[in-house]
Length: 429
Ligand SMILES: NC(=O)c1ccc[n+]([C@@H]2O[C@H](COP(=O)([O-])OP(=O)(O)OC[C@H]3O[C@@H](n4cnc5c(N)ncnc54)[C@H](OP(=O)(O)O)[C@@H]3O)[C@@H](O)[C@H]2O)c1
Image 1: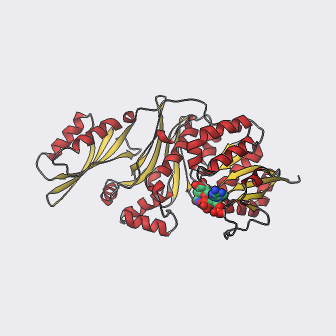
Image 2 (image 1 turned 45 degrees about the vertical axis):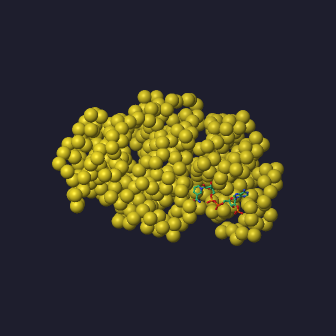
Image 3 (image 1 turned 90 degrees about the vertical axis):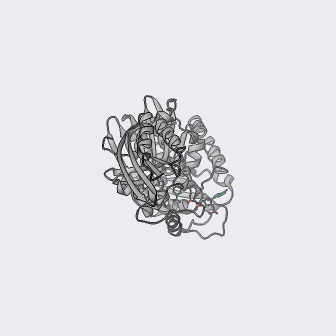
């Protein structure tokens, strides 16, 4: 069979864009063997033509003019690998309206504007794919959308931000938050301004996308309850170790009683749980569903060539399935209500710093009991008239646990704001 050339346009030729080109050139024979097509980059949009590129683009490929790319008749599919909402969102809209399928690595764009973009794609009858927008090299969108179509996935647990996972792994080895962040920056895992990572905003966008695909219902960024790792202290990390757990920034999407709950927060993960061993800059997603029980996907969650592998896979899928129907549609087919935030259930970890006085423990446990919360485990440390209490609480409603902690914060013997985190374990608690 002779190969058919497919012209590719790239919006962006930076870390990911140049790696997409590299893969298409260096793995061109494999792609051709598998698909019968030779994918060639025809145009790539950039800002600065004088910049040195990690992989040469070739003569006449780089352009600073979007219209030149949009109107090039040789281009049949476009990869958006430039990032940001504006102008990337406008360009994607124009391309879809012009009947060009788009694949995007841009989580903020997909999470914030996915609904409108999919409506345009459906109207134009072209595909919009977004595998690389979540967990880079891990093919989780494809698995959810295609492989698990009948599995009724009802829970997604994810470590979806490599920067914070690296920082937490370092803190577990004894470092402070500031030292761990500085090391992540020096190694290139964290940006100079890592705000989106440490506040959980990056993970929230990815969890909104994963929940949308998993539950077939649009979940917006505003639906995700989000807490980052900035308030974590070495004391919490060492308490986790003492309790046989690891602290991880975990995204949890739950479909319970027909309602959706999505949250990103530091969680205490049991050492025996698959997510506890995900170390450094790696990502992992655990999918739980009716007919699959549990599937865990783990791999690099960032990096130029890793992200490019997912972009190229999407390009190959678009070429291989063009005009075949169902993948043209938005993955959302139903509207689901949101679970009341306080109704979400989990075991919890509670950290208290209290005055070392008689009756404090009784006061704390009676407050918990009044909110129908019981204690599964307690570790106490004393030092110079103060005590730290690390408690594992049996499964309870999040609303009751937060209310009890807020009440304890007003006790005169509670010296600092209590710290709460959900516990993730396979053990019954
Ligand atoms: N890097 C990763 O590990 C990773 C992982 C997962 C997802 N992603 C996503 O992939 C996308 C690209 O990331 P990246 O790391 O490759 O970014 P990058 O290295 O900064 O590259 C961005 C590219 O887009 C071009 N560009 C940006 N704004 C433009 C504008 N207004 N007009 C024309 N060209 C413009 C830049 O041109 P110049 O080169 O001329 O400046 C550059 O070539 C982002 O959405 C990111 O979130 C990245």
